[in-house]
Image (cartoon, helix red, strand yellow):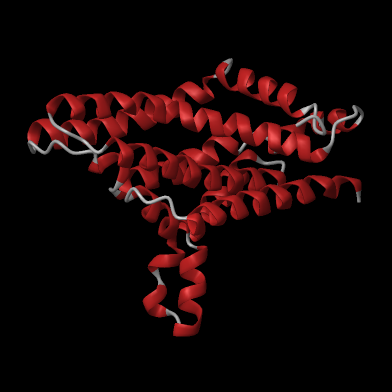
Length: 240
């Protein structure tokens, strides 16, 4: 971190801008309203006391696919359009510091949306016994999967100066990575294993079952590193 002293100031600036605008609040409220409605329906109308809605149902994944690009669409697209990204280059700031600082701020906003769902866990713990180990790995898996979607959204935001275009591109990229392991039956067998490994849901599902497999951790670390590197290269295009 000493080699990248500007990451923390950029992270703080971006996080402050999120919570000084309606963006973070709208994302968190919409996320919790939809998730809470399904959780309450499952609990009170269907009499099912389960954390299925949070960790195993497609609902959270679909919500992540939408809110991740919504969080990231302005990060670089707005700065490119307003020209403020050029101001950053007049300062001794490395492009990779800009990318990592903005990524971490967006990732924290996603985590802030997940944080209130601990109330569901507490509710389930009161109603009966739960596997806290699986709950912890479930949250780790959600944050890692959400991190990949955030990184894809940041990459999309680095490619355009239009926020709407950045949102659409970010959604399409995240949707494609999410669906990779769900179309294997339509693909030749020699491609199936490769695409299954690239699919983010395949690795999330492994962690959500309560098993921290090193292959899944390596996958998420590799994806995050690769996508942030691509976003850095994309940001450097303005110098070419």
